[in-house]
Amino acid sequence: MVNVFDVLQERGFIQQTTHEEEIKELLGKEKVTFYTGYDPTADSLHIGHFLQLMAMAHLQKAGHRPIVLIGGGTTMVGDPTGKTDIRKMLTEEEIKKNSERFKEQISKFLDFGEGKAIMVNNAEWLMDLNYIWFLREIGRHFSVNRMLTAECFKSRMEKGLSFLEFNYMLMQSYDFLELFRRYGCTLQLGGDDQWSNIISGVDLIRRVEGKPAYGMTFTLLTTSEGKKMGKTEKGAIWLDPEKTSPYEFYQYWRNVDDNDVINCLKLLTFVPMDEIRELEKLQGAEINKAKEVLAFEVTKIVHGEEEAIKSRDAAKALFEKGGVAGSIPSTEMEKENFEKGILVLDLLQEAGLTSSKSEGRRLVQQGGISINGEKITDINQVITLEWFEDNAIMIKKGKKVYHQVLIK
Image 1 (tube, helix red, strand yellow):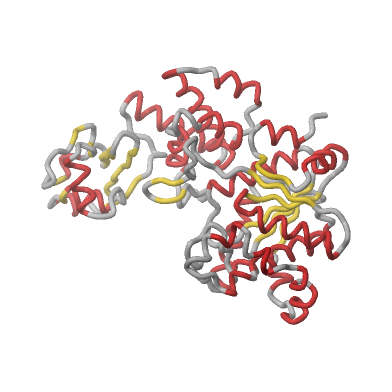
Image 2 (cartoon, one colour):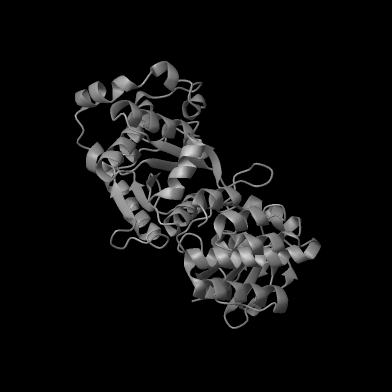
């Protein structure tokens, strides 16, 4: 039987491990309970979280038991990792609401049936901690000198690191200890930016319990140039269809750079490696076939096969026939707006395609806006009912962004 460690390694997930040979041996011979934590700082997971969920899914398919830790307690403090400023402080109500959304979304990717994956919230043990006890029993195992050398604190040292955030590493380490004691969890997983926090948790268990524990980090989702993926002009690529529509989601992956498509197929889909190696041989325009496989497979996992098919068909209708399809992002507007006419710059803002009139003006002047296939060259162009076909117009922004405006 193939060791899941080799699967993760071949697909490019693994970045760092605390004890590589021991972890590989452990995953190959017994059922391992492992965990990944998610701080609910927003009301939806994004594509960066999805990479971690894919790794967990591979491990679960291999017979190991995942624990999803929702950070209801740690979010009250805020992880300083990768941040130049202190995170926005959320209320308990906001954190609770975001936690529920995370639970709903994660349940789509892992099996939480009896004896399968577990989902817990660290608010359960962090919110009522006795601070003096915590300092004596947990804090004494941490060296301040060593903590200050950690990557997760370095970017904050110049502007100032608050004592509130300085506690985060201790709290995450304590999470691992609690999960070890409650569920026999011996392996913590996370993005590579979490390395300092993970090795601190491993060290805490070994000091307090005198037993082995392990950590493993995964690559962050970046382009071949090292830039973070999952960002568009509108912001993050969310897993919530209300925040990023299935069509927009599909189009993002359909339009990834040629140099990134194979890496994304390895990390974000279950397409077998033999098939991926065949797709890797494609050259020139044929690379689009690999992009279509990527877009369809990722959309199918996140939004279901029906939405993946609708998004694929909508894209084909646009690019092959110039048609209008229901999965394309749209904005409904009152008919009266167009009876008297609306300036194209106002229309672009109303549809959320530009953030300001100056941005719209620049796009029109550069030839970046078309309506129903007609390039708009006049910034004072007025759009009236005459432009509509079947109560809809299609706006094209740049080469890849399509948006329908519908009359209510």
